[in-house]
Length: 173
Image (cartoon, rainbow, N blue to C red; front, top):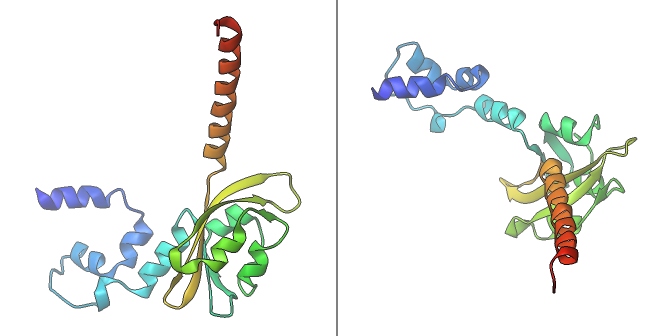
C-alpha cells in the first residue's frame, strides 16, 4: 500500500527530475541494493532543480560577477545576458526601484525587499519580491514576480476606499 502511494506521487513529478536521480532510476529498474551515492543526489540533479525553479535565481562569486542564472531570469528580466556581468551593477541600474541597497548590505540576515523592475524598451513594470543570501561562499539573489497579487491588492484597496466613500455619503455620521 505504501509503495502504491509513493508511485502515485511519482506520477505527478516531471520526468527529467525523476530520471536525474540515480537512486530513483535504480529503484524503478528493480535494483533495491543499498549503495551510498554522495548524499543521494548528483550535481546533475541540483542543476536540473536550479534551472527549472519558477523564481528567478542567480548567483555570483566573491567579486559579485554572475556565474549562473536560471531560465526564470529570462522571463522575469527579459532577454538580458546576465552571466559574466556584475550583479550589483545590474540591480542598481535605472531599471530597478526600491530598497535595493539593503539586499547587498544586509546579506547575513537574508533580507527580503519588494522592488520594481521596468522591462527595458517597454512600459511593463514588474513588482518583484527579492531576497539575497550567502550560500557556499556565493552571493545568491532570488526574485519572485508578485505583480499580479500586487495589482489585485491595489484594486481591492481602491474598491474598499470607493465603497467607504459611498457609504459615508449615505449613512449619517
